[in-house]
Length: 495
Length: 115
Image 1 (cartoon, chains in turn cyan, purple):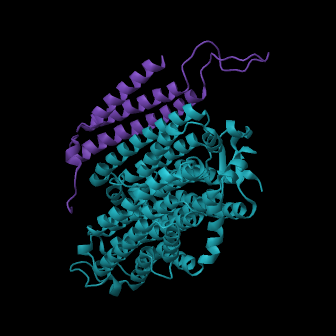
Image 2 (tube, rainbow over the protein chains, first blue to last red):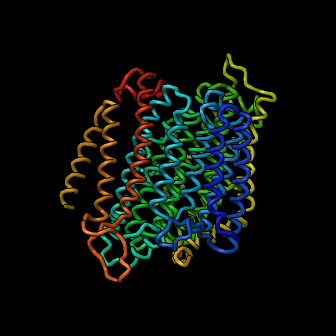
């Protein structure tokens, strides 16, 4: 297969972004182009995944310069899985945007920004060059700034300002880390860096650089203690954007952490990965405590992003092949379920006009389909069998027990229990009880139209849960490649 | 020369962080710009500062050592463009926030009704 295909997840959203600018007067054409782009992107993502799974890594040296001197795009199974997930989430949130985003936002380049956001995310998953990773981060951040404040409501502007400043600072720290790394190893290609770092006699400075990367990616990925910005900024935008952010933005940070700490900084796992494990424990525990204190549908979900991020990083911190399987499985499960939950929160706010739990109620009776979707997604998030959440947590906890990391196993079980508790809280306040006075719940055609996006994701979590063996085949290959960085290095440098 | 540059970078960072910690929105914007400059200078210094020759490999097989690595300079160009874009967006947004919220004091940007 032509290796140019791995540039497509970047090129297609870019073209969609450019074309939709020209159709700024016709929303209909913008939607057609955006929908077409998302569909093609989804198909190509599956082709890439199948290709990397069957025939190994695909590497594309951009501009056909030999490997360490050019920017390379490299897709291993892990990267391909992430691109598939991004494509699925983009597809459903785009469909949900068609239904719910108001004219004001749509006519101010909503679909352009949406496409550029997807371009940045896909690029970050595909790139094999550390500076290119920085550039793609900035692309996805710049479009996320615009999406976050699009609409110009006071609360959005207030939270948008903080979000931008924080991400600007983390961008600067990223740049510093790249500068120091470059001055030590003299290359930017990640595979080449991995070779040079392994050969370096004096590793003190490199470990410091690695920790700086952890700070940067931890800030994007909402790790303890850099997660404080997340709940409020993800509360600000409309549900479609919140679902996209909640599912994908933090996961780009987690992806980068996993990539960098399996490929480059893997020589001193006793120190670096133990630090990551500690952060994972604090992240999941404090995140879930934050969720317990909230009384708002969307805010609770936003805090749960933090606690879930802890599980993914826990897999990296344990750092055995089975734990990496758990981490990847958890990322897959989390991206699908979390975007689904944000979309149900969006539907709930369309139905009753708010996401404040104290002003919701009775939806199990008035809107039973929505209630079922939420119930299944919520139970899956908490890790109740037979949904995807159960198997991903099972793998992680097994892996933790194998190497006798009892502390983190204990914390993760407690957190999982508390997650169930806070899902039950949403269920109890939003779906049980009586409909609040003075509001008529939205029903009929307008309501049924809103359900398919969340329903697709609900079906996916059931399918993954019931058919975990099939998905584990792919994930095991991905984890194998991560645990043996020689595969990545050889594939990239032999081009 | 590298030492001098390190001091300059340090000063830029100190000023930037001082401005970032203030409550005025505009100062925060300027502070972030200064910090970005500091990081760009640091990237420049990481390619070493030398003078003498252009970074080409001579055809006669001789080895030149008195040149600056050009890669960091290319990186800085990219970084400058990105930070320029972000700053422009941030300034426009700060102005809009000032119009909507009626204040440039960051402590007025705190909290929401239901917390």
